[in-house]
Structure formats: structure tokens, C-alpha cells
Image (cartoon, rainbow, N blue to C red; front, side, top):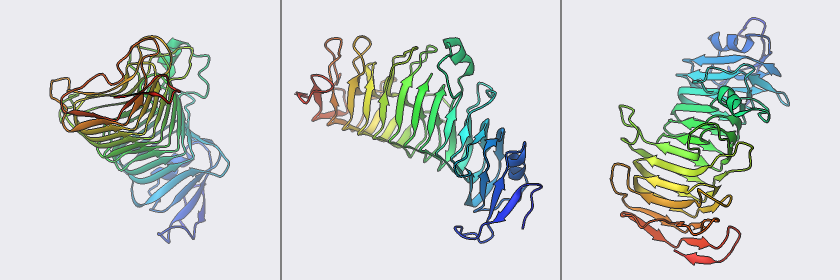
Length: 371
């Protein structure tokens, strides 16, 4: 049996395709987890079971496993990291961990950062800059809030996790990202930033932005990049945004939240479907620069009376003038501005078809006019 200093090893016989896989019971002694990760002794199929405690900042670099290595908390316990950084690694699953720093990392670093990962999967995480931000002033929000989760690479996922009291909630440029069934709450920037191709954003709840700066806060935002990294010059392809809830609750530093903002296309082969969006800005769903984009079956309403509402649903030309192509807005439901008249579907634009959309008289009304 492989030995790693004082860490107790227990042979794990069943449940792995690798008969030599090992289950490690890892204590929260300072450096214990990092030492095991750096030891070179791990193989595919191993499980690392973390005892309750704080494990500090963990950095995993250039570890590759064909069968996933799982790092998880012991049953009923809380294993906390100050920060998790994974660089150029593959085949690792993180499960039931919390990442809440005792001391905030540098401002340009996320609490969870997956850089050029392959087959990295995060599930049932709790990620926060602090457990309780109720006493934070606006300057303290600016000083203390950190980005939640940042993902790049291929075939990465974040599922069933809770991200709160952060700057930007989730940012991903990964190809084939799955961001599903997460809750992102109390954020000072954008809820989700999704820049990668072939990605799914399904059944997430994005709830309540905090007004701490001049950022135009979005529930979901995307933009394209070309090879030189210039916004609006590339194409983001094959993305699904489905069955998400975006809402702006009450906060003592209330912001004006935009819903789904795709402002710097092109966006090609996107489906935006069955989302419920309750926000207080005219950008309910806005796509600028579309090619084969379908916006269908969404329910978009105004969260409170007064300006700048009401949220509308719009597909229009790219900022550089390129017209939308082969795109449609179908079977959506929205409402007039609660503060007066509004334009819930404020177009017809070239290249966009409107079909069977409905405007309700109020957010709870079953009556209204088809558009």
C-alpha cells in the first residue's frame, strides 16, 4: 500500500474500474491535502475523503487522470478551502466542499479557478467571499467581494452549487461547459458570464445584484472574442440557456438588473428557452448580432414600477451593423412597463421573425394581446 507520510490510507476495493484505486482519509492538519496532491502517488479512481476543517489554499497543477480522482468531504462534515486553483489538469471531481476564504485572495483571482481544465467537474460546492455580508458598506463590498467561479478549458461543469456574496458569480470561457442547477445570490457584477462554445446553462437561479460600482449588472451576459481577444469580433456558437430563473430581489444597495444581455456578437445557433426573468431594466432578453438564434417560451416581467423598465425581448443587428439572420422570437410572454406604456417586443428587425408572442396586462394576468 502506498504511504504518504502521516495520512492514513485505506484500500478501497469496490466501486472503481481501477482495482488499484485507493481511498485516502485526509486530516485537516496544515499542508496534509496539498502534500498528498503533490506526492505523485495518486492514480485514476482514487478518492480523497476530507475530514472537517480548513485546508487553506489548494493549487493543483499538471495532474492528469484517465479515471477521475474524486475529492470530497467526509459524510456530514464541512471541509473548507480558502481558495481552489486547478491549472492544466484533467480528470478530477470536486464534491461537497466549501470555499470561503479566511483572508481574501488578490482581487484578480477567483475563489475557484479552473484554468485549461479537461474533464474537471465541480458539484455541491458552497462558494462565498464571506458567509455574512449584511454589515458591509459599499466600500467594503468593493474591497472584499471576489469573483466566485472561473472556468476555462474543455468539458468542465459546475452543478448543484451555491455561490453568494461575490463580485461576478460564474465566468466561463470553456468549450463544452455545463452550468446547471446552481444558485447565484447577492452579486456585485454579473451572475453568469458565458463565453465558450457548445455550452449549456440549465435550471440556474440568479438572484439579486448589489449596486457597488458603474457596472451594468446582468443575470447572464456573453460576448464574442476573436483570436486577438477583441470583443465583438468573433462568434460564440451552439449555446443553450434554458429553464433558468433570473430575478432581482430587495437589497439595501439595490441595483437595476438586466436579464440576458448578449451585446457583442456574433451569436450563432443559440437557444434561449423557458426562462423566467423578473428584472427592472429594459434589457429583459437582448441579442445584438444573431445568426440562427431562437428565443422562445420565456416569461419576462417587470420587477418593480418606475424607470428604467420595462424589460423587453429584442434581437437586433450587431453593433457594427451586421444584420441578424434566420432568427426568431416565438411564444414568449411579457408585459407593458409598470410605470406606463412600453414596448415589450420593440422591433421588427431584419432577419428576425416574431411568432405567437403575448403581452399580459399585468404579470399575474391571464389576458393580453398577441404580438
